[in-house]
Amino acid sequence: MPLRHHATDPAATDRTFQVDLRGLVDLLSHHLYSSPRVYLRELMQNAVDALTARHALEPAAPADAFGVRLYADGSVVRVEDDGVGLTEADVHTFLATIGRSSKRAEQVAEQRADFIGQFGIGLLSCFLVADEIHVLSRSARTPDAPAVEWRGRGDGSYAVRTLPASARPRPGTTVTLTPRADAGEWTRPAQVHALARHFGSLLRHPVTFDDGTGGSGRSATSVNPEPAPWARPYPTPGARSRALAAYGEEVFGFKPLDTIELDLPAVGLKGIACILPETVPAGRRHGHRVHVKGMLLSEQAEEILPEWAFFVRCVVDAESLRPTASRESLYEDATLAAVRDALAERLRDWIARTAAGDPDLLGRFLQAHHLAVKSLAVHDDDILRMLLPWLPFETTDGHCTLDEFARTHRTVLVTSSVEEFRQVAAIASAAGLGVVNGGYTYDRELVHRLPEIRPEAAVADLDPATLTAHLDPVDRETELAAAAYLAQARDALAVFDCDVALRTFQPVSAPALLIDSREARHERTRSQLAREQQGGVWGDILGALRQEAPRAQLILNQLNPLVRTAVTIDEPELARTSAEALYGQAAMLSRRPLRPAESSLINRSFLDLLAHALRKDS
Image: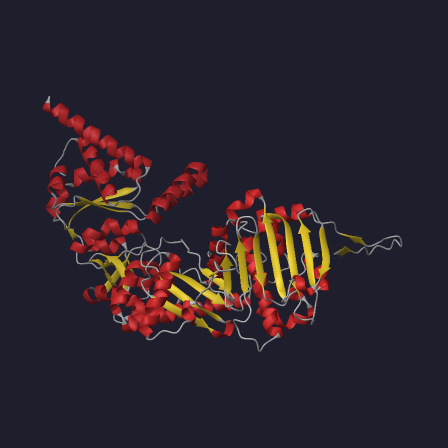
């Protein structure tokens, strides 16, 4: 590629870039291709593209008239095709010019979409395993064309010579590699056969492999003996469904919960989506197996489906998707975006059909993948209407669907965090309140949309005042008798901005309830820091604002024997210690992370109570 100078200096001349082939091969091996094994894929791909061009030249020829033959005996690797072949001019133009592809040739430009490859660098991948590439070709475009031999070496040199037609009796191309000693891992016969099956099992042209052990081609075996499973005929729909599921299990290593057949004629895409039988951790995305015109492109193509579809793994073969330069992933363009949207719609259709016709399968699917469905329902009104009544939620009645829960609770209360739900669940249940844990991803938003499905249902966020309003007050005489203890308790817990109240509630086994939201704690911490960092007038103002920050509430249960004993304590120090112990127990029962000061308080109160008991005994 010439570098043109456009300066006004009349002495300026054109120059030509110098290419360090060794450096370029190193670049390919370390930055473009994931592994040296791709050399065989590139050779097979070039062979298949040559066959495509040959069929375009001779459209009346049977589909299986031309094929690809692989040979590896440990000393050489050979790939031979019956494709369109190369003339001497083609060899100079396409094999000796890095970056140019015969697929860009003017005479086949209109057929570009029929080829797998789009970049003229594939042959260079052979230098990952060999120091020399030998190409022998004869063109099918020119009658009685001579054979042409090209030898390219890793140092950047090459030689071309014309041979008699008898050197290659039929049109096509043969590429022969003599592997380097350090490339044995990728060029042994068994490995070459395995790689050929790995990359080419779905190719539409016949491909065979021969390890030379049988002599005269008698040891040749088919690399792709059968069409893709979705392209085969089956006696019944059930047989087809079982065969596709078996193929999915063979490819992915798990028995699919169900199999969805994929067919997008507009882009020539066919394949299957396998529903994973087990829960997938949130945020983990599985790659999909993507073939382009039969050749395996990638086993980790995440971009073929939207992020919410992490409950499936796909294997597809497409005609119109564009590979990247390395041909190991898909090029992000409008076509890929349209395919992603269309496949997402197929998954929605499957969910709709399953919800309407197979509740048992739907139940097993939701048990494993309810998080994925919830993420979809948040943004898809149709899925929301279909599946919200079926989705499981954690509630004060246990794990159940919103539909079941709304039948027994006219008002559905929802918490803003898991921690808040755990604080109030037992007591809210005993008080007859219906509370849903809204702390998990998507749950709070979905619960608030319940009236869209059940207009008679009322949904509200749980407010601490709502819960305390359902706790019975103690009689006046009991409250007066406990007033001194409550004052000592409030003083002891003032450091945590915690108020103390006495109520009666179920269950009796719960001595205390701590109501303290995460937002309230954050607000108190922020106010405290601001006050400490400011002085003077601003400190006084911030201190006043801090008094208005939401406070925690420790609600003691008068029905609990421990509390009934504690409120009779008249020794100030012991009263404070018991209040701290009750606070610590309530904080632990809420199962939220304890702050360092709370952990210290729990330890101190336990030791103080133990010391008090020992002094009393002595």
